[in-house]
Image (cartoon, rainbow, N blue to C red):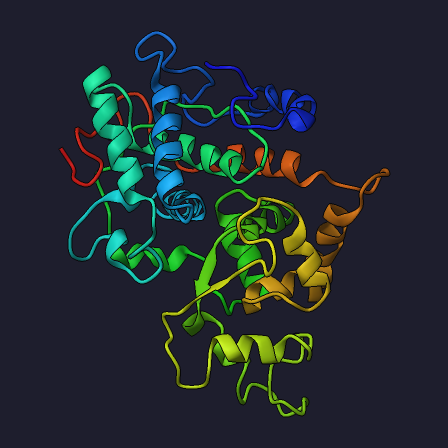
Length: 332
């Protein structure tokens, strides 16, 4: 493994070192462990990292894309690379997964790994490693990723119904996370990934027009009134539903806590995001991410690393389960 500060500014290296051992404090999934490929493919992480970095330089949008891809993979069939399969009626063919930037980076990393270590590194592990690298490239902190996942042999469009949606209540989101072994703090933390990336107008424009009779504008009353004109200018009524809008206004390219500041100020773009601040069960956690110090504060980067390791072990296949794909887009 290369030096831990290879992507980071010196000022954050000290805290990053504290994160290096985080993965070892968790009960890993069925057979995953840090350094799984240390003997069979010692340069695996370096190859994934350099590939993601190369693609990121050409298109920074792949960072939130890969992070979203990993989340969607783990919530459907477990973390087994099923989201990467091409074809009709696959997970990849559905609205939540089609057109996500970053698929090419995963495929490129797999091509290089097959050249270096044929039949060794799974696509599921490539995706988990790439998600970590995507966070680092957007100025978040690093963590050790347990590996050893095998690739699944099933990818069905119908299964994406297990993903949270942009209009769901906190209760509904908590239930979906609970089914996967994740708690309310994991929910708030992982949704905090919306600190980077964009969403399309069609996923939130319903909040802007004829949403409520209690506001003069007719917009969702949880939106700061001063923010409504901004969103309407970006997403006119009956306009282009595919137009992309930053999820974290003012800081969409940097992994930080501005996302939670925006929620506090009524500037959450997705309805489900803003509910993190308006619902008492999640607001307390969101507030703790904004406290700089003290017993009640939470370090977003540290907690994100913990929740990512926890999530990345959902439904892991290991041993003789699944397969190691030759290409990530098709079953063997």
